[in-house]
Image (cartoon, rainbow, N blue to C red; front, side, top):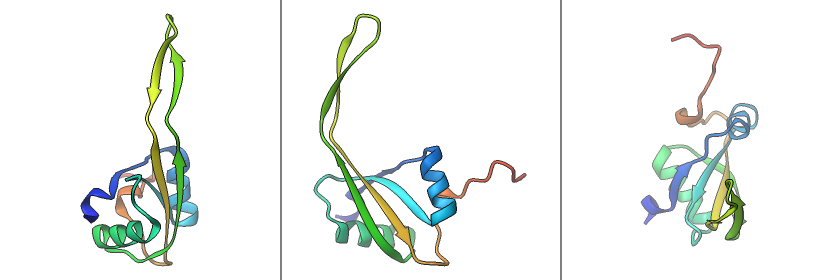
Length: 101
């Protein structure tokens, strides 16, 4: 069941700065998952130790967009901010634009 808990990583400027500065990583997760299940899933999938998990729920909403002001439904989501213990990191979020390869 752990394979279905983590849906995708959220890669934004803010999430990358959280990863670099505070060792926190942001994922979109299943709305039915609790903090303990998210912690176990991250530890198993990435092979790291988790210090803390915070979750954010957003409800379904609608917004008007485009020239004809069409209504678009924004689905309900759940995000998890996972803080890792010192010395652990996830390579997927390791981004340094100044580094040459």
